[in-house]
Length: 82
Image 1 (cartoon, rainbow, N blue to C red):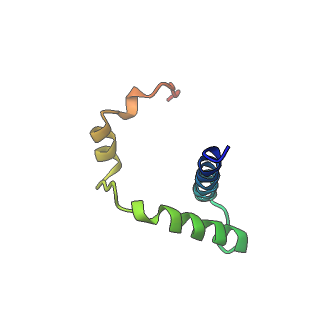
Image 2 (image 1 turned 30 degrees about the vertical axis):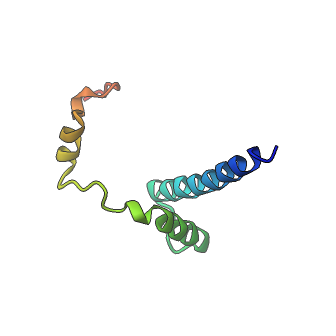
Image 3 (image 1 turned 90 degrees about the vertical axis):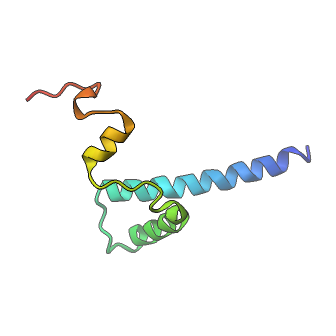
């Protein structure tokens, strides 16, 4: 029983961190109002948690990002009608 408690504690902390980062991403993607205090607070927490990884990947353009991963805009599994 004693060995499982630290693992559960670490899992809980990591889950909370992931939840905050995902919430921050969703607020940005959904273009939530940054003047809202809750949105601002969640964004600040998410930025603080993800901050050490800022600049890990830097691309000069979206085409460079796609080419470096081997993907292309036309290799999507979705087919969009033109």
